[in-house]
Amino acid sequence: MKIFVTGGAGFIGSHLVEELISDKVDVHVLDNLVTGTVQNLHPRAVFHHEDICSLNVRKIIYHEKPDIVFHLAAQADVERSIKEPNYDANVNINGTINILQACRDSKVKKIIFASTSAVYGNLQKDLISENDLSVPTSYYGLSKLTAELYIRLFYEVYHLPYTILRYGNVYGPRQKPKGEGGVVSVFLEQIRKGLPLNIHGDGKQTRDFVYVKDIVRANLAAIDKGNQQTINVSTSERTTIKSLIKIFSQIHTKKIETIYVQARKGDIKHSCLNNRKAYTLLNWEPKMNIQEALEETYKYYMKSNN
Ligand code: NAD
Image 1 (cartoon, protein in one colour):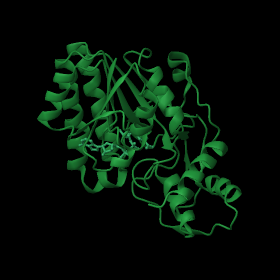
Image 2 (cartoon, rainbow, N blue to C red; image 1 turned 135 degrees about the vertical axis):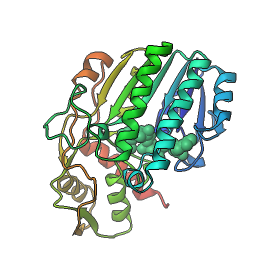
Image 3 (cartoon, rainbow, N blue to C red; image 1 turned 30 degrees about the vertical axis):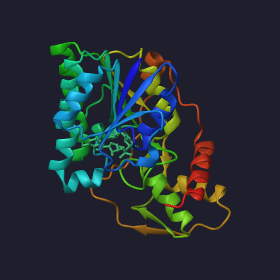
Image 4 (cartoon, rainbow, N blue to C red; image 1 turned 180 degrees about the horizontal axis):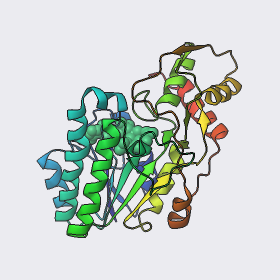
């Protein structure tokens, strides 16, 4: 089997590639290294240093004819999407259309797309399900939602099979202190440097933090399950920023200082996704509890020297 991972040099993509690599699977990575790194590239994966918006990408996919394409390459920074909506839309919408056209032309069996809880916007609901309203409050959420619509229409028009996975706030080793679920990596970097942690707003905002290895398992399950479905991948648990810091204080032996700063523009107050559909259709549920997973992530950051 041949599998392409766009964004395979990034945080989540590199973990996915690691799990996919085996004697039976030929893994290719498509990445322009804008946020991904050479260090994240798996030595056994074939690397194509390309932009997903380029014509070359279409040629490569057409030539290689992969069975499955995991499409993770994206502009994944909410703040950048607010500052540069044009760039965000180009990568996340036009880039996705380019990948879809390539998949259609080379008769890919399935595209599995990395979407996000940001598509729901600031819904005032305890637990958000896939059928709830999507009203994005950032251009990032909007461009991801638009990409989803293109994927669904490519199925209607060209019968290109898909699964759309909407991730909660992903965290784990190799995450950079930028982008979507960055707060865990931001805090760990500050802890490593002995700096105080900046809390935006009152610290009572909640997120549905899901460990990267659980995200990878959901992606693998989607290879032959969840066809033509949009599925939340989350823990269905609310964690406040304050309680995150409390866990870090237990893991870290020294005292952690905190500073309260202004809330960020476009920041969502609460976000928690219902994961029942993932359980039913993908036979998936999160395995790592947050304490253990944060400890694993903490150890990685304390050892790293970037
Ligand atoms: P990341 O920035 O580490 O990975 C994105 C990768 O895509 C990088 O390697 C980058 O170099 C590559 N890329 C960006 N633009 C490209 C382009 N034009 N052409 C080719 N490659 C390009 O981010 P991540 O956190 O690993 O996110 C992976 C995917 O998961 C994204 O689609 C993101 O929207 C989605 N997602 C992430 C989270 C999260 O909490 N991290 C949550 C929900 C959804």
